[in-house]
Amino acid sequence: MKTNNKITSLRLACLMAGAVATSVFASSHMDAPLIVLDPSANTTDVYAFVQQDNGVKKLVTALSVYPFEEPGIGPNKYNFDDNVLYQIHVATGKDVAAGVATYSYQFQFKTKYKNTKTILQSYLGVIGDVGDAAQNLTQTYTVTKVNNRTHKSTVLGTGMVPPNNQGIATPLYNQGDNGENPAKDGVATAGELDHYTAQAITNLPNGYVAFAGQRDDGFYGDIQSIFDLLQLRSPGKDSQAGFNVHMMALAIPLSELGGEAQVVGVYATTSRRQVQVLISPVANYRTDESNPNNDPNRYMSRGGIIYGPYIQVARQGNPLFNEALVAIADKDMYSRSSPTQDKQLFKKYALTPELAHLINAIVFVGAGPAPETNRTDIAGIFIPDLIKVDLSTGPCRLAGGGASSSTNPDDAGYSRLGIFGGDTLTSTIQPGFGGGTIPGGWPNGRRFGDDVIDIAVTALASDLRTSPPIIRGPYGDNVDGNDMAYNKVFPYEPTPQNGRNHVHP
Image 1 (tube, helix red, strand yellow):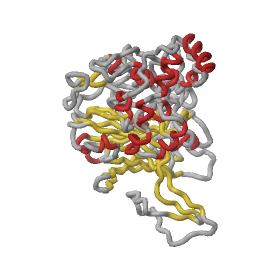
Image 2 (cartoon, one colour):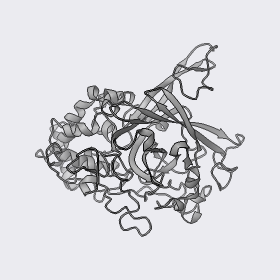
Image 3 (tube, one colour):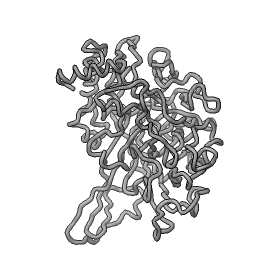
Image 4 (cartoon, helix red, strand yellow):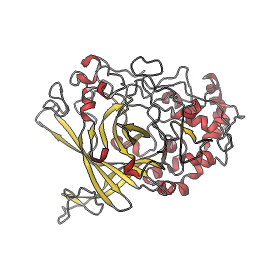
């Protein structure tokens, strides 16, 4: 994109597509070269936002993995990986600016079969309840809270993963409880959730609520066009439409984080065991079977293989940072590093974002509005790369099935563009843009439904360093919503697509 010839040819493509600015700022779920090879550990999206549950304010967090998960495959299916340590990290107090995880919430999975003498890996019949006799493959998980200041680990509890949405075998996910029909749309109340999802929501001690299972991919964007020489189209097509992900969600009472008078930071990581293969079998190594706290100094051995401590293979905080700002040379390093290193290693990419230059050169024909240097406003969002959430506000507005939905409308005042669409919250602990006014969605937290592509590019084209800020746009990729309605209750992400009846536009 840096050669004059290529800029000239792509400029025409962008102008023909309506001069929209998101062509170089999209989330493909394929952040770095190496992690693409490991889908069960490949993070797609992280979410964090404030809600209220029976009068108790909570920080809702979620991590999704398995990009472009095709519904309804066989004979094997997509599952969480027993050998991956999935973690959602929360920084509080002074740890936020330092990029240090104060608390880490770990999800670890165990897989069992009821019958291994069959080719029917997952479904022995129609599943009536989560974990019943017809669900051959079952996964359970343990949620552990680690206080990184005291190094104390507390097992919060366990849950069970519901079946994937295959179709005939899983009718209760689908419209009319019929496996021939598309998946049920999102709902406004907990009582309307499909049977499997409702059963799989797990209440843990001290007010925590957990869920782990397959969901519709709630991210949306015209990724195919963006990476097809920027040949954008109007209307755009949601490249994630018809695909599922595997998601872990945890609602955390604010009392567990030190109260609401603070801004916290959220990010997630996935890790795998370090492995050493030896020529001859090894002996006298301790196993980790009695190691619930994941002591990295414990090892286990099987034959000639030593399994060592967990090694981080991926991380994600704010959407788009690694894939859209960090250069190829450093993408894999980002996956292995910590937010504590962001200021030293990656701040340069936020201060002088190549994307601002490309937007100016390609979309605006060399005379674009995006400031290209000293972008302290962009660095303030991404460095350290934590999703910052102001806990002092009221609950954020939620997306449902659109403003015109008769059964599950968006909350009044909700905008997919957040503050750029007039959707704001009031903070009691920071001045924000005056009077405590702060974004109602990303980059103050991230909700399901936030149009992170449009928000990010509008922010790049604008100048948020001035007071009042100079807002330009909004700019967009002509994809303005998900292909399925969101739930306005936990676990929020939509029902998984039906493997028997789904489409990719």
